[in-house]
Image 1 (cartoon, rainbow, N blue to C red):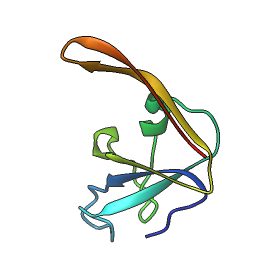
Image 2: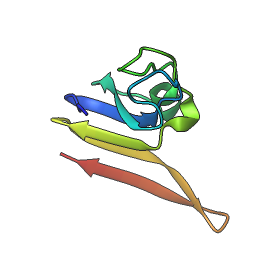
Image 3: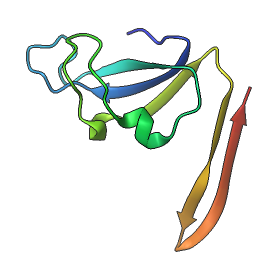
Length: 87
């Protein structure tokens, strides 16, 4: 398992002939500003290069990167501002 500098996402490969089948694989997303939709779209398994389902991605990981998340979280029907920074 390799996590590259920048943003990485962890998902599950569904290709039965892949070494990563039903195992967690990390997909390199590089550096830059991205939306969650962009992060989960058009990802291929690093082991077999087959497309992965966006619903298989459950974890974000980062290495050697400055990270900031902004958004809105709804708690009991109420919008709560969400802001996270890690340098």
